[in-house]
Amino acid sequence: MPLNTETHKISYVRPGSAADKAGISKGDMLLEIGDGSLQDIFDYYYYEESLSLDLLIRHPDGTEEKYHIEKGEEDTDIGLSFENGLLDDYRSCQNHCMFCFIDQMPPGMRETLYFKDDDTRLSFLQGNYVTLTNMGEKELDRVIDYRLSPINISVHTTNPSLRVRMLANKNAANIMPDIKRIADAGLTMNTQIVLCKGINDGAELDRTINDLAGFYPYVRSLSVVPVGLTRFRQGLYHLDPFTGDDAGSVIDQIEAASDLMYEKYNEHFVYPSDEWYLLAGRKLPDSDRYDGFGQLENGVGMLRLLIDEFNEALSNEGRHPLRHKSVTIATGALAAPFLKELSYGFMRKYPRIKVDVVTIINHFFGEQITVSGLITGKDLLEQLKEHGVNERLLIPVNMLRSNEEVFLDDMTVSELSQALQVPVTVVKSSGQDLLFALLNK
Image 1 (cartoon, rainbow, N blue to C red):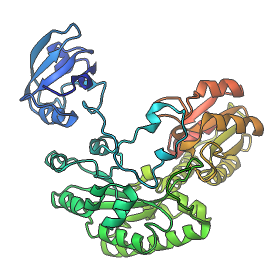
Image 2: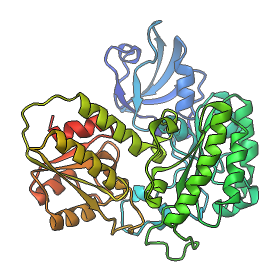
Image 3: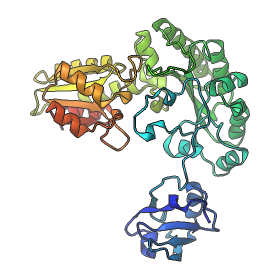
């Protein structure tokens, strides 16, 4: 019997699926599957691969019933989705990292923003980065047994004593043995470093790059992002921000290492995030430097890909009647210079449309936070009111909570639209999406 069956409630049964034909319904609870072991979603996936399986279901009225399901050869699953995607409680992080962004959050925001997850299962399911410090030997064995790959790992440094200091967790010293175990099992990993000035940069950064490169191709990539420092760091470990000169030195150091990797393996392996180029005032690398953009979620090559996709879509787009004569794009300081360049190219092809790009300064978290994904609805509204808005407003999707139209401070897109008295379009991530939004297609 599962320890917490409340996490096993069925939220959807696909019509025509094996589960639907067996009579299982939304609202039922899955208690057992296969031999009865059901720790989490990976046990479910394991047993679901069988063509023949038994399920124990509890109905909403409390009655329990066993079902025998026979899958067809063409069926990849039995057709069930669950309210809790893990079928288990989410595991919180027990680290006290000196750079933790959640520790820099102000009080009074919604509860979910303060939850620190470090669940290796989410690394496989959602692409989250985990430290491996919050799991035991048996859990790592289970990851290996179930072939959960790729695993995204927050390494930060391969120096054991320094990693213990940075993460404030004695288990942090095991990073290299853990990575070796995963590599020896033939599983792949993506890795990241949050770089802190005077802590894990310089010679320590070289050490980390070289140590991880020694596990290539099992360690497939390494991204380096600058620490994010908000104005709410009172009482936390003192960290200094990187200057423009610092950023230039970091870029040179990383690109020198990536050039060596490219000579050996035809892959650059280690990548600076886009923020370094903005801070240093340097031009973004060409797309071939990013080797297929495998670290997009860490802000590596995101702007280059957007630029290339937009320009390609613009060159292929014909001329046609236009519905709006003026558009405003609101974005963070990181993307603003690049979006302005794209808007100039757009207006050369469509001179009847005026495009204004408004840089939203992050007053809430502090001006050092430049990404659009951390802009609050209040900052957006106040600065757009001051600047003025054209006939239509475009905002990037990463300003909003995943799959919802809600900003970090719980303002909704509808409330923003009503306050500004203009329609608001949420633009997805690709360059073509941006072009179509400008054209109101």
